[in-house]
Image (cartoon, rainbow, N blue to C red; front, side):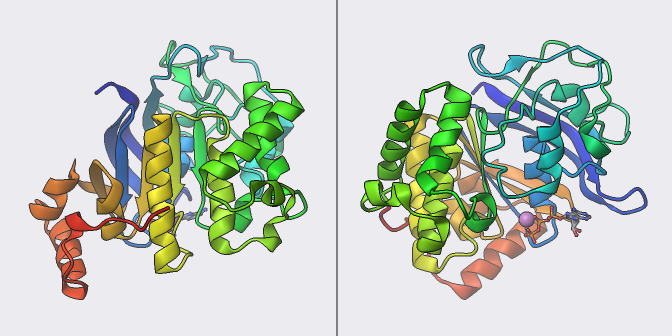
Length: 333
Ligand SMILES: Nc1ncnc2c1ncn2[C@@H]1O[C@H](COP(=O)(O)OP(=O)(O)OP(=O)(O)O)[C@@H](O)[C@H]1O
Ligand code: NI
């Protein structure tokens, strides 16, 4: 399996004097694989996801590196420029959750050296006012991802990623328009197709609906449609089903699984729920207090966990529910 991205010795500290939220994580994510990362609240799952997507807040201190191996047609070559890049849109990303999915900024540009400084320095990507101080790249030819185009990000709360005053069809179409260069009628047609693909009833009506007119599950389907609208290589779902009831949760997991297979995407599925992770992942990584304590094939993690903590997660689940973890299937999506 060819790696899509390679994470080496990644550490993130939100505060200079604070403990690291993730510590020394090394991990390769293969192209087309479905990797779940599980762990209890506060174990660093979101921090890892945000670091990969280049979405950590400006004050975060990052060590280690993340290298991407995007196909020629996708990621732009890393910029070796050391000129300051003053980008207002980049500043917005740190401050606003709404619109992340639709961010048009080239968040990844030149980021291989910004995101992960070889020194444990301040993250240089977003200083106040959006000014960027560039460091010469350590990596040189590595390619860098753009949020929206190369990475689709689905958050736990769909309301946070959808604009409340814009019809959802327009929000999805904008992603296609921005990243694929489609004209507006083509972008709207793509939005309609995507609404069909996420199994929303009456796509023509939903196209014109506002987020508040949709249920939580429907909003999450819209958020997923927007996340995949530009055909990203990597889909990151961070607790994307946690706010939904069990049945809708299973439907959304099945939906994500189908879309990932259909589009040949790589999936990073973040969850505190080992059963959900087992239902769709090829491999599972277990985070505890910011460290990756175990990483293995789903079957090995469930049937022969090596780390005592993984074992306790599996046992705790089996104690609650006798259904074998590996035999679960999501409901139809
Ligand atoms: N913006 C932030 N500023 C300061 N500390 C933070 C910030 N975000 C997260 N942390 C801290 O970093 C650690 C890891 O948090 P993170 O959100 O990555 O965990 P998580 O596994 O995603 O948890 P959850 O399951 O609750 O979403 C926690 O101690 C958390 O309090
Ligand atoms: Ni989280």
